Length: 120
Image 1 (cartoon, rainbow, N blue to C red):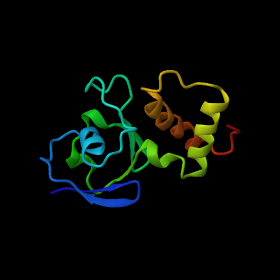
Image 2 (image 1 turned 60 degrees about the vertical axis):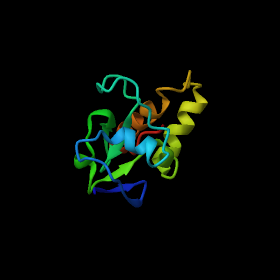
Image 3 (image 1 turned 120 degrees about the horizontal axis):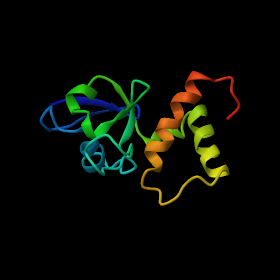
């Protein structure tokens, strides 16, 4: 059984290694901020961070996520950069229906990490 490090917690999931990680995050761990839509990595709703890299979890098998730090939308507000990204989305009234919001927030962390001196 693969062991995952999700939002700083170690969890073991009883699924085949090729199972897409997004479904396990939602169904087994209750982290419903990670959305499932197309299963084709096109919309970004399933975006999580694996070791700090924005990754489409709908095409990332559990075996590829095992042993890496997985950060979901539920945890990004716990970091200074994550709080800035979330505050910017709220200040600019970006949220629409909210379905793709978690993927957009997660994708927004990358530029913020790469350019920490930039005011966001």
